[in-house]
Length: 318
Image 1: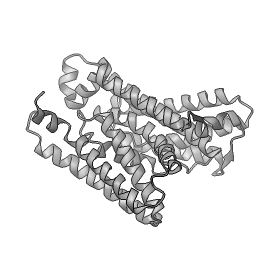
Image 2: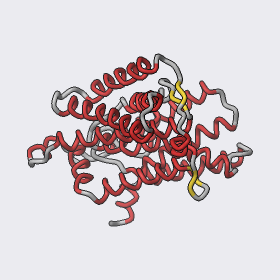
Image 3: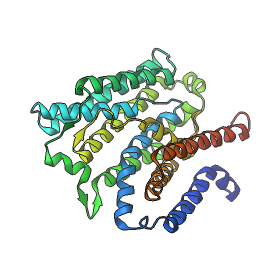
Image 4: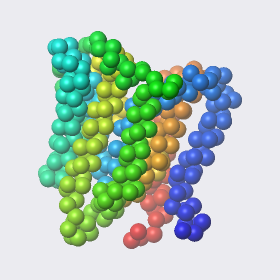
């Protein structure tokens, strides 16, 4: 591959790397405690939950889909594990049962999009509302404590001094990277997202490819919910509000195209780190929370605009 072609192919990732480096340098100078070990650990833990979801959201978006339900699936998982544990179910089975519920949401999403041909935005917006409503109904809107100390280790435990969620976060990204870059299913994801009709006519089961993507998305949201519950030691039905927008922002910021067929999980990793580091820096600089929301909204708008510009500059037929 020539240097010019390499630079063209990886331009979004290289640009975001430069932006992230500049952000880190700026915050190191502007925020007194930014580069301290404790703060770096805090950043790692804070991005882990969003990052786990973003990794598989990358698969969904590359396949030409979109999953808005992930934040509500996190909330429903958090509530389910606390309720089951509160009723005396061993924490392992409570966690497994909660993951099963999360996976069921993914099955509904996948079938709604592929078999019923409902627009992905509408289908997952519906399950967002259903899962969010169930989380509030099941918990009666209350925050419930989780008693299991062993379960808490999933969220606050450490290995070699690093938080457990960081290891899970890294493992999920590594697995998705291998899936997309080295496995047959990964190639099918890119093909379906790039040209759905051509794949269908060539005999690819495009519905099955997309259904698996939605299932993986919901399962990762369930895993993120377990980690969040373990970090908090409690289950609040509103704990994951807005996660879906943060996830989509990270994926698009990382260079994955909203129209499908292009992107990579390494770019998503950079997107997650950039948004997480930015929010942490704004906290350290005592920027008001509502202004932080404005900044995050601007970041999402810029990411979508950049994706649109890439689409307009892409030669027709590619």
